[in-house]
Length: 442
Ligand SMILES: NC(=O)c1ccc[n+]([C@@H]2O[C@H](COP(=O)([O-])OP(=O)(O)OC[C@H]3O[C@@H](n4cnc5c(N)ncnc54)[C@H](O)[C@@H]3O)[C@@H](O)[C@H]2O)c1
Image (cartoon, rainbow, N blue to C red; front, side, top):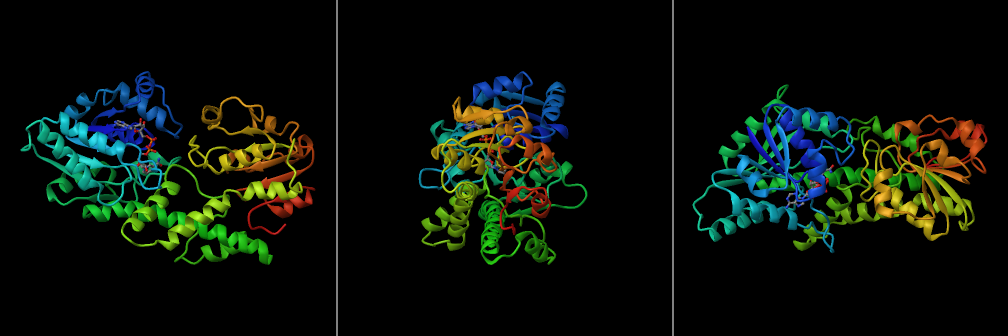
């Protein structure tokens, strides 16, 4: 089947590559010329496990192509996916300018029936706006009679596991008001829907809200656990034991109840905010969402506060080794990463940072440029050299079982601030470390 995908970011590129892998003829369109040029040359602009070979193989097989030519993209696919960014607007609501720009382009260029599929995360009511924008563009060309359908098909992939999530989805949500489109999408998704039926068809508005509901629920679990970790610290309990104690209840489960230094990334922060703003626009105050956001905001400062209080509030001239920059492991994405809050707070307090991340160093350099108070190191060990203490901001596997003798040896004093609770406090205490973690007994 012929598929066009607008937006070649984390979602567009993964969706395009996976749809091509099962035999479709896919064109990915992006307005970022540099990105498209890179992709044409077989260079992948983001880090996502397994993505590079998937893109290259399908490109070579002639099933996956990249272009900045919108008209070519619109001509190509029966299916027109919109997978562009929906960043927060100034007031926190979702900025729909990119989604609507694509809708206008489709209306300006289409020459026959199209199924327009909104895969970007968008507020309820966006499909109506997309439909109007296409209809306006068609009317401007005097082609009002041309038929098209708009579908909401939110994406639930996780960065770091994106290919697997797309290939073996938990669910495929299709929001449509027209049985014809749900059949077409059922056909398109059939290769990813073989072991049992995962396709959940619903009305468009419910599909749009489902995506926000999923992210808001997951963010709530994280903020809830972080709140509990802070309480555990105050009352002398150990959050790790509490976590195991509550996770064993199947109604709660072990997933997503790890305390830490807050959620980041391109989705949870903006989606919780956008849902809260959207509720407010409808005259409703979403108090749980407000609190989820507020707790997360505070939690992102936690590591800095721990470091500050260890040094009696004076961080001037201190050097902190930082392991982990990406907002979570297996990605190079630094959007809303807790590490950024830590870095910026340390710099404001006069400290310097020697940082290492297996994938996000290029992105860090792009964001912060050259600065005297940031040294990006070649290895975790190099980051320790001459540092006063070690802080861990991302739980990459490679940090989980380090050589503690070497850490103690390289640091001015054996101090670890662990924002992801990856080490054992008792073990580290026995080895003479001053070990700080989130909600754990020291
Ligand atoms: N990243 C995730 O893990 C994830 C998961 C599920 C859903 N989402 C949602 O999917 C959407 C895309 O997210 P992302 O992380 O892939 O974003 P991204 O920023 O990585 O990529 C968006 C791409 O869209 C391109 N673009 C902007 N306007 C365009 C236009 N008019 N025509 C063609 N391309 C255009 C940009 O140049 C960019 O390359 C967002 O709404 C996001 O909330 C993201």
